[in-house]
Every structure is written in structure tokens, then in C-alpha cells.
Length: 317
Image 1 (tube, rainbow, N blue to C red):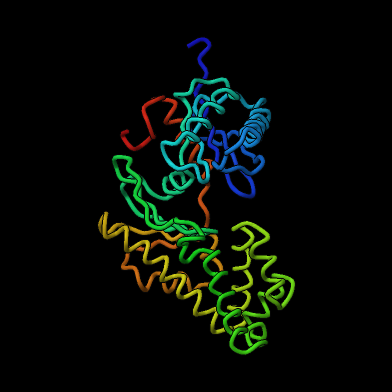
Image 2: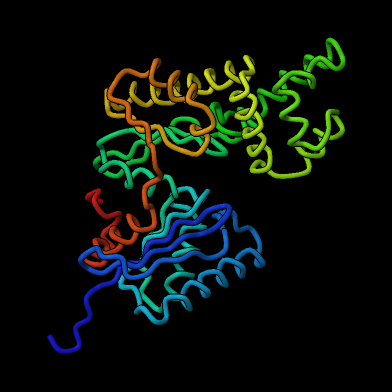
């Protein structure tokens, strides 16, 4: 047909360190990919709005030589569902890429992470990164969660939880016998990470940054585990049990479905996956590598382009 242009799908995955994108053809072939500045769904001021808009404009400039997408699927960290922020991101993307809003689908990043591993209704994803959450997407598109309440309430098994448990152990030992906490393997690893073996040094590191900086201290716990520290080993075993609780909670609601354990926190120690698998009946999948989420989003966008405005692709909604 003269003038017909095959649809292109744009997938976007936002994150705290970078936001990645991928453009695919109607056949699912990757045409281009790249990254832009980090962003989340936490946009509360006009300055936040302008920053997000400028990031999308940068992405559009990167795409200029590859063609305009027919549909866009964007997974945004912390956006929630059916929120005003979802509508805001939808409008921004439609405006920047000069397309109609019904060809733009903005979803929570966990929705994309699930679709990269399972079809709707197929399984359960337990994710442990800075925070932790259990996630199931029903065949009808309903989202079911367990956990994910944040570091101040309950992120059991996540990097922030691991770091907090280790710090609690060291500092309580210090309360009882000064010097006995920081002198342990785990204490020495943490003191190196925070820049000193004192509460003053730890306090600046813990309360002077965000939850991401707290979560980074989990790497020190991993180093102590590799050195044979028994408390680090116990913490990682308990982390696996905490994550197993999320899986069991969701299985109690949706049945004995396959469970995928994913996220960077589980790479800190094999004890996490071992204790998780011991507590959760098969089938259990341990994610050895991160799926190509931007490409998954882009291919879903191609599907979405065929039925714009029909809801989330592959869910029947």
C-alpha cells in the first residue's frame, strides 16, 4: 500500500541509575536501543515535571534517525496503578512523540518485569533489589502483590533489609561490649563501607543518603559472607526465608504456580536462593540473568499498536 509504514514499537524501562529504551520493528527485530537519564514516578513539583519532559525529549532526539514509534509501552518505577502520575506520563509521551494518547501505555515497572518472565496468569515473581515485592498478574489483568511496603515498614529480604540487619547486629554488640561489633568480619566490612568504625560514621552513611545508598551497604555484608562470617551467612539465609514468605503468601491466594526469584540482591550470596528454594515447593525458577525488559516492552508496544486503546496487551483488558 503506498505510503504505508510498518508499525514501530518503543519500549521504555525507567530506573534509579538509568532509563533504558528499545525500538523494534513489526517483526520484533531490534532497530535501535539506548539509555537516557534516570527517572521515577515520584514527580511532585513542576521542576520534576520539566525534568521528566526533558528526558523524554532527549529520547525523542536519539530516535530521530530511526523513525517515529507507532505505540509506546513504558514501565515506570514507583508509578502505581490508575494514578494521576500515570496520566501525566501518558500525556508527556504523547506530546513529545506527537502521537495520540491511546497509543501510549504507561505501567508499573513490576508489570513489565513480570511480562518479561511470565504470561498473564502463569506465575509469580519475587523481586529483591533495593526493596522487595511479590507480584502476580492474573489472566484478566488484575495485579496481586505481597510486600513492597518500603524500607520504613517491610522490605524483608531486600538489600536495605540485609544492610539494616547487619548494622543492627554490629551496633547491638557495640552496646554490650564496645569494640566487639566493629571488630567482627561483618563489622570490619561495614566500617570500610561507611568510612569508619563508629556510630558517627555509620549515621552519616545511613541517614545522609537515600534508601539506595543504604541498600549499597549490603555489598559489604556479601563481602563478609565470602570471608566466612557466620552472622552474614545467617542474615542471607533469613533473607531467603523473608522472600519465601512473599511467595507463599501469593501462592495461598493464586494456587501452586511457578515462582521466579529475581533481582540483584539475590546475587549477593547463594544462601539467599538456597534458603528460598528450601522453603518454597517446586516449581521455582532462579533468574540467572536479567531479561531484556526494554525489548519486551517494545514488542508489547507493537502488539499494542495493532489494538490501541484496548488496554494492556496480552491480558484481554
